Length: 183
Image (cartoon, rainbow, N blue to C red; front, side):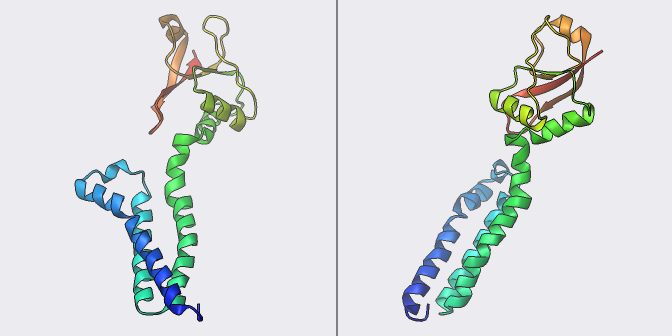
């Protein structure tokens, strides 16, 4: 840093400028009034990236490479913390069956006599993993489990024998889940 201060300042200045460019899509969405399309936490992340970019550019322009580099180094843990506490918890419900498995265990802590019906493959594997066993696929008319998790039941006779415990559409998931319990 001391031997090539000028080139290091130029490199740090461009790094800060590139961070400022990363905020352009969010700024355009805010101006257009469609920033609600971004998942929660993205506005905070973009604001922090913008702030660090401004500070890095300012320190690079004032010929203070150590301070500019310090903010580059601090950006990494700040980005990790924002991802862990603001972005990933909101995405977890959309991409993982972990919370759904936890909700099912609250409804029936034993987790026995449970079947799935027309659950997408990734969610089926996720439920198998988080419930620590292979869940059988329910075949209408052949078995009568106490609990059924999946899409809408195929006929009215099944609806008579089962009551809906919850009907939930998970945000970002292109399917609706029903949890049925035998009456």
